[in-house]
Image (tube, rainbow over all chains, first blue to last red; front, top):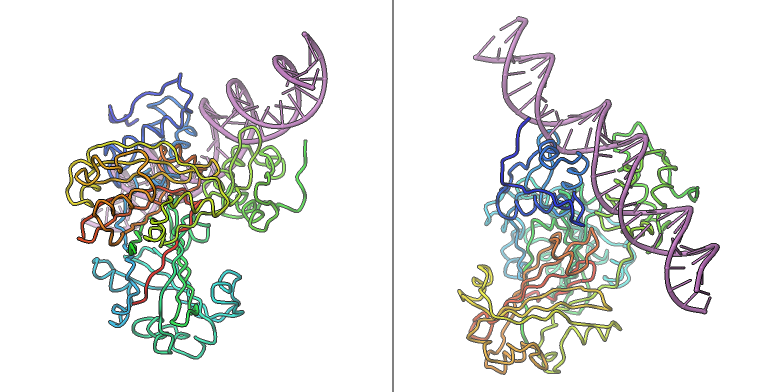
Length: 262
Length: 262
DNA sequence: CTCCTTTAGATATCTAGACGAGTGGGCGAT
DNA sequence: ATCGCCCACTCGTCTAGATATCTAAAGGAG
């Protein structure tokens, strides 16, 4: 029976109101925060903690599930429980849709990823016409059907973002926008070529826990929220010409905005 | 023994690879999504589900904990497990720091809340000088000590946001900014009066699960992430004059930004 | 009528075990 | 030396209880 490295973890306080499994979680959390267990490192096994604290295995597992819910650790079947490494984050600057970038003709995601030394990838592209959801319809100004462009973005093989663009059919149908590959500069470049000069974007940001489908698509660890961003693009006449619904793995992103003080 | 309303929930598939507690969670989630259980409504009790599915109580509890982790339900000791109501959200527009608002001399939070028909409140105000953290120091341009202003915002009694502003001492010391109540228009109005004309703000947005301390301060239900926003205010000379670190209950907020397309 | 106690039903925590299944190292057969 | 199998260790799931605590409603004492 392997014994625990001494001094890492303390004892339980039987007089405390705090539940035993919370006390154990607290001690593990503190040990992680203090760097006693480093990123990627293995925590003591369930059996070791059962020994150390003199509690039942379910109680130890309960502690682990607390830490998992906080996104601090992740369990690997047959191997152990590990401190979850904080992955490098991807920054989205607020000028990422500036015309000067668009005119360079390369997709923003690819350029940024290469600059960061990562290997970018886009997959599961789907382009089809469909019925607009109530929300999308409202944002686009009561359109019934839309062109939907779905794609998933990966960095170094890891899915980080799932996005769907919705465009009114009278704008997109029969244009390069309806093609899987819309060409250099992306659909915003095509929209401008089609005479829809872009004026501004509105972005709505929420954060929440992922649905099971999102967990699957983005291969999310437990305890990782998603950032839900809904961007609406407006042309010079004030018409909404595109709605882009994006779900991002929150542990992979920092959004960055510049606001004028005027 | 109370029996389950029939038809709400199906049977288990013993041949499925999916764990029983996940199957139960799936069925409950679907029933909630379909509106069979409405917001605020009570789910069947553990005992009822034990009866219905013929499993042990721990298995049912395991299912509930899955749904809690997703933020879909919350348990109330001695009462039951309830579908978590989606609270009204508070919108933060990107022009919330526009000078025209500041000149009206009322705190943005109060004005917005009143407009939404809510009862706003600010508490646990702390103003003190302290050592700057490494991050804050870097953002403010290598200052050693700062004035920190901490406050918590509540809507209708519910804490929704905890914020700390950090300002360099050479700017803030001995000014109204160092007072608990800085006066009409808030500290940004005072900064401008002191000759630091504000030029622009930078905001960084992250989402993550809350620390136990944040759970306590914001009285967060399980399965609710936080939005972590760090805003830096720059004056006309390009100097960072304030860093504001804000943690928001993600289920209470939608952030909204306008971006120019230029 | 008010206040307190009782009680039933609900969740919270914990124990002690059982079996299943993934991982990886050691060891024997080839 | 290598292949293949076994085994120890790991987490995953499930059972069947036990005690504690909280809630709300009912009933009794004053």
